[in-house]
Image (tube, rainbow, N blue to C red):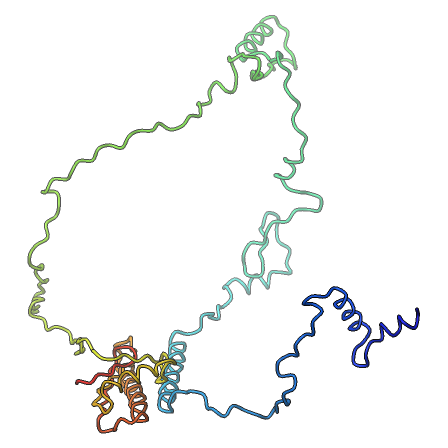
Amino acid sequence: MGLAAALLLGGCHHQDAVDSTFDWIHHMRGGAIAEQRPPPPGRYDPYPLVGLTPTTPPALPSAQARTLLTQQLIRNRTLTYRTVSANGTLYPDIPPPPNAAATGAAAGKPQPAGTAQKGENGQPAPATLPPGVNGAIMDAAEAPPPPPVVAGTSAASPAQAGSSQAGSSQGGTQQGGAGQAELPMPAVTHAGTGNTKGSATQDEAEVAMPEVRQKADQGNAPPVAIPQIPDAPPEPPAFPGYDVPSDAGLADSMQPNYDLTNVRGTPFHFVPQSDLLSAGQDGTFTKLLSSTPHGPFYIRGFGDTASQDVQDQADAVRLGLLRATRIAQGLVSRGVPASAIHVRGDAFGTGAMVSTTP
């Protein structure tokens, strides 16, 4: 039995005891679990070499587009440097207060009683308590509650105290010494006794919800109360010795001459701020060449500008020309003669448009 168990657990020469035990359990259960597992994919393929690199170059923007983007980044960095130097730092060097030197000089001198201590910056130092003292609020919270007032026991009212005091003085008996009268005590009544005379809640106002009133009806304002808008602008202010022209006589500001016509054609999409065509547009080239295989083609590239700055629009025109050139290269590689292609760059717009008519 021991020899059989050793042979069973030992298994084949390429399996250990655990694998042999699992194979024996799977064989006993049967079914799909007992079948031979397929080898992993690529098990018998030769091991790849680590030094192999991709032979297909990745799609990159043109050198001109990369140069243009580098120039824009340099200008943005220079503008940031100039803006920071003009605005100054956000954390200025604040000088110490004027009395800081006097405070430091008088630190070793004793201060008179009642003088508030000051901190390092000349501000009053926070008050401290001696050890074991919690302060007035904590002492009041930790103090035992006052003894309850027994119902039915109340002191004499001020009127009764005054009459008793007068009677005792007339009788010649005075407490506390000659010429001294007893001070009257206020009346104390328990809340549950029902005695409202002299109680503390008699003078208190009743807590109630505010009265709810309906909103007053607001009538329509008469037309006379509404200010009227004049048909003409107001008169310009007059200054002695100066001839101020009216607004109608002022020259209008210069407006850029934008081309607002709707550009028609086959659209092409590019990577933002680049002349690299987006993937999956080979079918667009095929569609163009199927209708007019030899042209002509009029390509308009747009630079995606969102600024009216002269430099930004010039950069956008350059990017539009690069995009139009990239489409022209794709058409030439597909057999279209270069003489049949016309390119144009615009600042405002997205991507590029290709048309067969100018």
